[in-house]
Image (cartoon, rainbow, N blue to C red):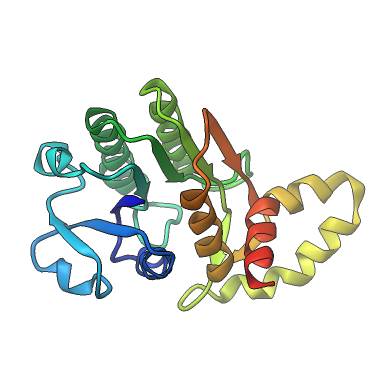
Length: 218
């Protein structure tokens, strides 16, 4: 199919585009002037601004699916304004642009919630989910907590804590919902979302991200 990607030069975007090209999809990705060189070979660049839908919404067609990956790199406490200015503004633009273009399936990376930390980030991502629903889009909403991978490895130290929490009935649900996923698992979950469009709104949580990643590896 034809797939449009916003955020294709980032941590997950490049690997996902490469995977979708392997699957035979035609992939077009939004890029700022000069950033198009960071896109994988075979991806068709669309020059525009993720924070201004007028710069790209008329060039989404003939895409059938829209994958939204725009967001602040390395989210953390103290970045509330950046979440508002980048994460929220970009999904406001993307949801409206996707509706304008008649997108059949929207794929959005949200975040696992509720959680005891990162409240500002969660609030923005939940608002993104609300905007997608309000636009009436068929969508797959993927909710990781933390994605392990290059430059994102420090939480490996928490694995023993997660194992203990999973063993305790009162904390098992939180440990599973807020579990860690790998970069490969995340890419494969998004790849599967593109391959199998949702009717209505489908939520892919941490256990499902892991299942999809392991299924593809097998």
